[in-house]
Length: 246
Image (cartoon, rainbow, N blue to C red):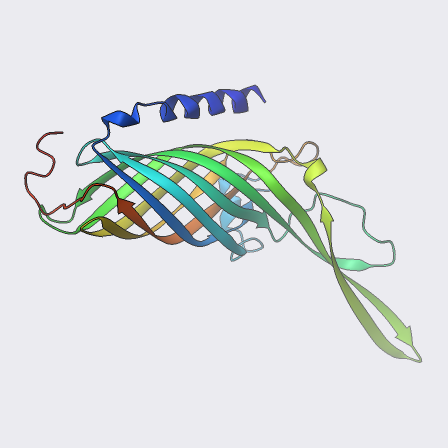
């Protein structure tokens, strides 16, 4: 818990960098999909395991970008991230008359990342720009559900039958409400006048165990997103003297 508090203070300190020094400011939104995975105590390589891959959920964010030079800007975001797993089990309270369970958990977080963003134009006067961003985040668990699909088999007059039932349990009491970690992205941006369009891929990784008891699990997500941002001052990367004063 102390580490989470220290991480929160670190983010607030970074966010306290005087924004008045930024000569260009943008407001933007982005949305996309992410994979929902747990490490299940087996390290970050578990994200690529066959029983957890391709478990996807939505993600979305609103952000500000404060540009300080032609290469560097600071980007705080308010982000909604759907995370979880196909095979994570948090509760053992299964109905006694069912078996052969398929388990999945869906966790939704409200995240506050503060990203350091570095970018360069593809050519000195190009509208296209590649960039990378990385930084810490603090997240708050907003909802958490454990889904069970239980199948019961029975025999009637020599014929085998089965029936299935899917239900969900609220598992927030079993999980820590606050987490923190690292987020990173790489992307391609196209800018014309005051508007930038971009596509980016990346991910986030929580540094702390999500469970209060039981197996040690980290949560995270790989993300693909598209977005748009509006610069309150016209930003034309094609001008050779655009950043001469910075």
